[in-house]
Image (cartoon, rainbow, N blue to C red; front, side):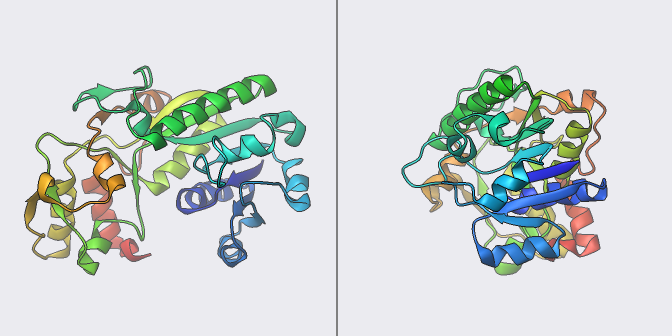
Length: 294
């Protein structure tokens, strides 16, 4: 198995770790030379990709790639709309990936839009609210067209709020930036980054195609997560504040404009088991292991 991860960042590196454990040869792209060494340190062969062209070395690598994972958000290049990889290859996967056997595209549960706290699953129509979620729907559709044309299975992984080692409520509490904002009825799903890696490997081993929600079992109010992290740390949580009174960036405020509970039953029915099915289980492990800092 020869794997290429476009956008080997936080989630991409967690995916790489799982494929490496399975014995795969893994390469990944980054936008800077400075980050290349970090990928090398994690046994990921690095290639530069800025969103506008494929270098000769990268093209040679892609000609041998059997499993492709695309985790770069749409519109990475200035003045370019849509998926950056599909733009560069003009949507023709076989022209660049002649040995391709399976593709994964990392999307977001934001494509569902606002459902006023109701449950959604993969059959729920997309009603994206934000511009970035509308771009994701367009990218999902473009990848489906490209995969069909190449006659290769495509798994679209719709991810909820990503956290894990180095990115979690403990970090925010330790830095004094944590807030408990209360918007009555508001809930979010989350996903531990290692479970993204495990789910991607699981789907690849089955050459699965279709849309899969990769998310935890427990949609919950955001203030509950901060409270639990503070309890584990043995400190007082920050005071609760009404959401309406908080100063937030437009992007942060937009997240609160979508309220839904996301089901993960489809991938679980295939036999996948989440290692961190709830934020309580995950936070306990992060704190007790000390990995919250890493």
